[in-house]
Image (cartoon, rainbow, N blue to C red; front, side, top):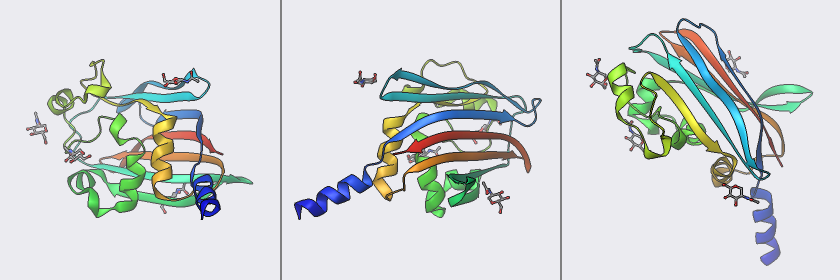
Length: 188
Ligand SMILES: *[C@@H]1O[C@H](CO)[C@@H](O)[C@H](O)[C@H]1NC(C)=O
Ligand SMILES: *[C@@H]1O[C@H](CO)[C@@H](O)[C@H](O)[C@H]1NC(C)=O
Ligand SMILES: *[C@@H]1O[C@H](CO)[C@@H](O)[C@H](O)[C@H]1NC(C)=O
Ligand SMILES: *[C@@H]1O[C@H](CO)[C@@H](O)[C@H](O)[C@H]1NC(C)=O
């Protein structure tokens, strides 16, 4: 029994590393990235942060696609590729458990969890304590999302095979694609 549990724990204890992040705005008059980076605090603790400035608020229609790619010979779609109407999803997260899971990988480190429309007054209001310093009236941020947190979230659900991955998010507003964020990572 002990051996059995050891094997289980061994198999479901992945180690997540961030290796790169790329944020691309497809329309600079709509949105632009102030920053988008990975920082290493020390050898075992890395985090990523990004900040998007929205230049045309209010936004009433938001669609988000999240896809995971895994490297075989080149990167290929792997397991997840889901698109949601973000406004509807935020109102009812249970409507899409798969997206809910993918969103949970960064949700608590972002200020995206509010209802539509994304407007100026609202963006200024609900600022989770975690997200200080507070200077992002028109901004969407993911702040200091760390590898240990992602590790725990990944472990919580399914064993995921080792390898190189891309966590790709595509952002659409008013039905036009506006931005792409790709996080590159490894699981060992
Ligand atoms: C790395 O930094 C994290 C966060 O500050 C800290 O919790 C951890 O103990 C550090 N690890 C090492 C090996 O210094
Ligand atoms: C996810 O699915 C959409 C729609 O079928 C497709 O356009 C997109 O290329 C897919 N994403 C990836 C990373 O394969
Ligand atoms: C934010 O997330 C929490 C659960 O994590 C949820 O209870 C709450 O309703 C969400 N807030 C909004 C404005 O959607
Ligand atoms: C901004 O959005 C919030 C939440 O949906 C809404 O209550 C508020 O009236 C909106 N404000 C403006 C100026 O549109």
